[in-house]
Length: 130
Ligand code: B12
Image (tube, rainbow, N blue to C red; front, side, top):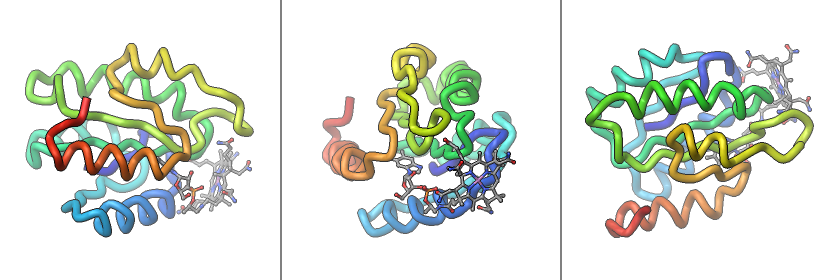
């Protein structure tokens, strides 16, 4: 499942990640820009994804990721699904507090590191993801 945060209208990040994940052999469902949290939950319940990838680049990801993670983790079926967030999460490349996002429920906070995402996808496929 590929998604972004409710405030984020950027789309090329989603297009890029969709292509990358497809190249890595994933079937990708892209929820699209500015999805309300409830819509992301509904998509996840319908698709039962092996991995949820949240991308945000508008600078609000570090903040908006927290309630989104809470909303997803509140659903029993999604409590243990591997879930990562990345992109330009803070403003002007400032370090973001990964701890807050992880406490909220993200398995990993990846920033812009697509290599780490590729490794995580391989781990999910191999059944060895955290
Ligand atoms: C095009 C664009 C827009 C367009 C978007 C149109 C559209 N339909 O997509 C419009 C004009 C609407 C727009 C609006 C805004 N934008 Co804008 N936008 C851009 C711009 C110029 C290009 C983004 C893009 O398409 N990149 C191409 C994609 C492929 O790359 P990417 O998004 O960088 O993603 C890469 C990585 O981040 C990474 N990645 C992304 N997600 C994830 C997730 C994971 C898990 C991983 C591992 C990696 C990863 O992979 C990608 C490939 O390397 C950037 C500046 C720039 N040059 O990057 C600003 C930029 C993203 N915008 C910015 C801002 C501030 C805004 C606005 C808030 C401006 C405003 N005051 O209104 C609004 C926010 C709107 C909203 N509600 O979200 C800032 C964000 C600041 C920050 N995070 O530090 C940027 C960086 C410009 C800047 N330097 O200030 N924007």
